[in-house]
Length: 313
Image (cartoon, rainbow, N blue to C red; front, side, top):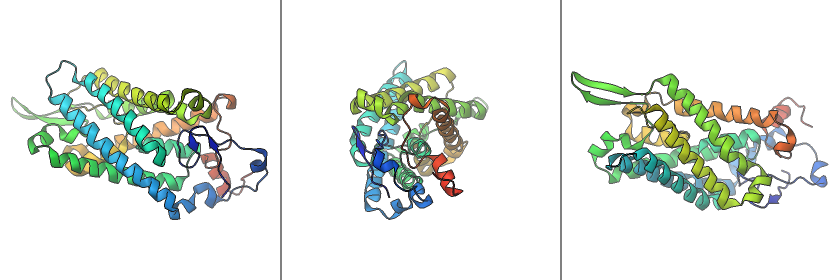
């Protein structure tokens, strides 16, 4: 596999916010094979598996803290719990991204791993390893939270997981309240795309990442996510709807541990972000090249397809 180069923020293979600088010597090298495009050697790379441990533990802590924040703010007697929740979520995400970044690139979210794969920053193989690690970590984080909260709180607040609807006692028996599937689906797509466009975009472009600096970029990512959580919970005003997930692993962890109604419409928290990732990738291919320095990404989806059909150049 061709040797990778480093920019101001780290290694192309391990950092989602870096873009390789391709020199003339690398340009003259032989085209990459399909195996190299897919990153199949990553499956037997100790470094990749070590990095996945960072993703696993980081996601576990993220889920434990975020779900705890959801429960704590909703249980507290404040006028705007969603505002407090959004601020605390932004701070938590920023801190954890900075903590895990040196280990694996600080994904902690299948959305970032998926979009980084399509753009070509990491291989498909590495993305698969990361996403599996993130889901396992999310389940461990949800299990840890379940172990420290009472059963009544777990049931009342759905373990802080991603919900579309909840069942509440009504005058004539239990009633279901929440958001309609179509509304939640579109919110998930829009919010995830805005997340990629307004924050992760800066991390992918080495010019902006270098000029802004690591701490600023990660702070913007956390801030944008916090704002989107606030917007998605405020614009609907529906009790029972937990807001846009924008992190399928987090939603999966609580659903796996808590079960029940958390599985209702769970597909939305996967399909919505997946569509947003593809929309974001298409956007990066449509805009003028000088506005987004994507040259040199050896795992780019188009490059994989070309290699698959033997037309890699």
